[in-house]
Image 1 (cartoon, rainbow, N blue to C red):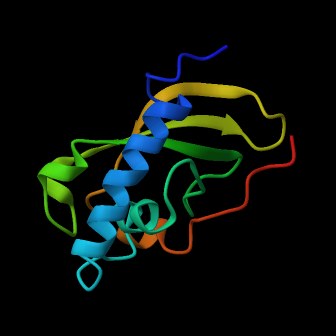
Image 2 (image 1 turned 30 degrees about the horizontal axis):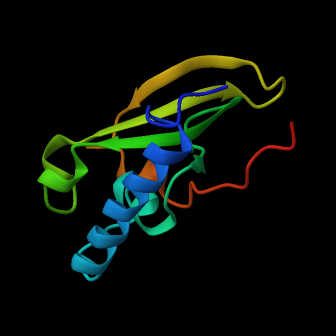
Length: 117
């Protein structure tokens, strides 16, 4: 059973979503449709797929240091995600850091439903 106080755990996720809700309220008119804006608007966990990925999908599990910055790039906050193969459900990388700056167009419309597996 996962430790609820670590990233991805239910207690940690609830605390992070409280922070995201505050950012959503505070920066409502400033959020861009980059990965930060998508996750802040949706909350955690959040399944995304970048347009340049072929057989890959990611479940965003944390936005580290997001509360320290401002939109659109939140002073280099870190996006952590578990990355999977779409075709098999195989975990490719746990806690991967997803790149945000300079990738605006590849994240556009990237919010996806969780996979069926």
